[in-house]
Image (cartoon, rainbow, N blue to C red):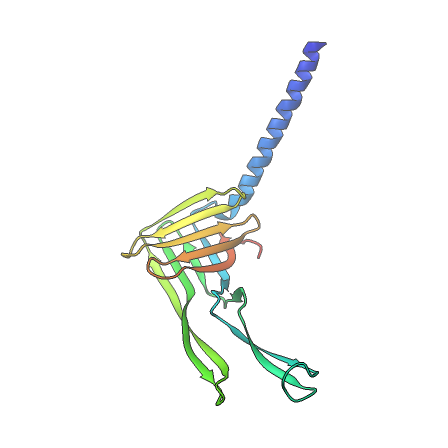
Length: 201
């Protein structure tokens, strides 16, 4: 009877172990699916703001809470959102032979328009295009503690190596940190596309 109990316990433990292994393997395959090959593209849909880029929003309000004519209040407020949407066409493409990057970069305040009273009415920001192709680069891929695919891409063509860090989530959403060797880093949000398979946005 003891032997029978021992056998039953052993079989149950073995079944649980096999089940866990199968589940972990399934998760791993799901995580790395968008990046199974060495050819993929990151499509940028948003760019993280850096705290200095503001959108101007007009606010109107009825009442006497502001020092404006009664029953009509209007003012312009500078709002700094956490991210800004991007037009299509910004991406990072990785193949076995090339790394191709086309991304927008923010370099600071370019021009400020003020009213005769000195109030700021509009701001113009200096955006430039990061556009280059590298044939001397490395790609390091790991699975982080969250179960997401973590990529570190280093382009070594220039004197100041460029580092691109990607985190690809299980649903295909991707965060990217672009670190130029001599300039401030910039973050982007988007998704990974691979072999005509587009991950969910």
